[in-house]
Image 1 (cartoon, rainbow, N blue to C red):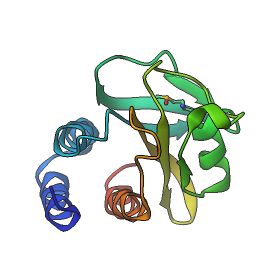
Image 2 (cartoon, helix red, strand yellow):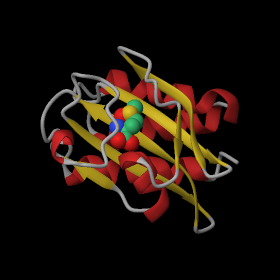
Image 3 (cartoon, helix red, strand yellow):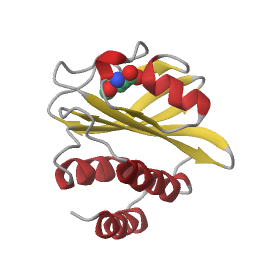
Image 4 (cartoon, rainbow, N blue to C red):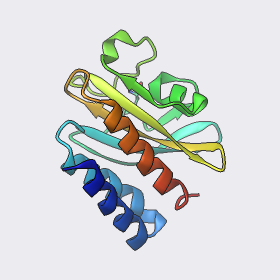
Length: 149
Ligand code: SME
């Protein structure tokens, strides 16, 4: 699917669903629409912890709570910067979730200049994520931020 087409669909999901089911619908849609998005999760920050609120993929992760600053996820949540990791095995911060994961994209969600969560995508393909993926997911994070607490 094309990114512009996907963004239009996500906009529709946001307009038509309330906050409770919105996150699940978005991870479901991203996972089914892009073959290299093997696991898609959305974490929200609560008391300095990232809490996994919705995910789609082959398996559940044991990392459903990640302290800020820990792992690639905790790092992105602390700095507010998108992380594109071409080879997770080369990154010392990496918290392994799935043996099959080779690359990872983490995009913080900001609201009123505060980081409130993030979108985390794992791929079984090495260096699966391009700048286009990052920009695409950053747009989703922006669209979402006004609709979540
Ligand atoms: N790999 C992440 C942890 C979350 S799992 O990928 C679902 C990290 O290093 O923070």
